[in-house]
Amino acid sequence: MRIYNVIGYGLIVVYALACMAFAPPALGPWAGLAVGAVYFVACWFVGGVYLSCVIHMGIAHRALDYKAWFVKAITIVNNTFGVYIDPVTWINRHRLHHRFSDHAGDPNKLASDGAWRTLVLCLFPYKTEINVANDDILKTWPFRLVSNPVFAVAASVFNIWLLSVLVHDLRFALVMWIVFRVFALWINMIQNYWTHDRRFGYRHHDDERDNAMNIGEWLPVTVTFSACLQNNHHHSPGLLRLSHKDSEYDFGFTAVKAMKALGLVQATRTGVEIPKEVPLTSLGF
Ligand SMILES: [Zn+2]
Image (cartoon, rainbow, N blue to C red; front, side):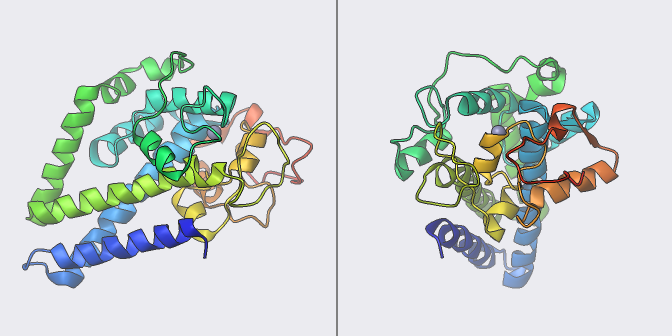
């Protein structure tokens, strides 16, 4: 098993054991595990739809056209109740990441940066002076609100408090809150480190300009909503799906198709253009 899977599954086991060990006596270990599982799945699912499907493919790459109310609603919901990720600075860094992938100017990681350096960069990315996040939707009040640093602190204090009220125990709430965020950091490392190091994963496209790799196992693909298919994605960042073969497991695309069935999203003109090197006869969207 590759190191990233060992760490990912290991963190899930640690989270589960921590929920059982720190559950208040009134709950007991098994109900504590069930409560922890609900918090884990809810934060992962809302966070994945928010960041991978909506902010990443909808706004940063404009491959998908989501209903504006849905974009604003999930931005407020995720950043108030889940793992806080400033959408405006994230979109700016992500566009620069594609422009300068693995080279000077990439805020996430340079080719020479190792695992520990990249881990620090997940929390404190390289500074950038360039602003390429000028989209109109980022100037609307929900985005201005959540991208305010005061909101980031207040929302975190609020959702820890809310969690402690719901589970009647501050220590149990803090354990779930902190360990889930360590798991979220692992998801970030899949994106920023393991899929940008040629020792891991596989490639469909022999692009020399970057080190982007595809990681295709069940856990990383599911938790990242397919964003770990980085070689595919860097080759055709505007394409609305990240799998380039129908045989590639693509959880994120399944989620996007479900949102389309609910009337929340449609393709953009550029999102459906299949580059000639991509071996798909149809998008299936
Ligand atoms: Zn991207």
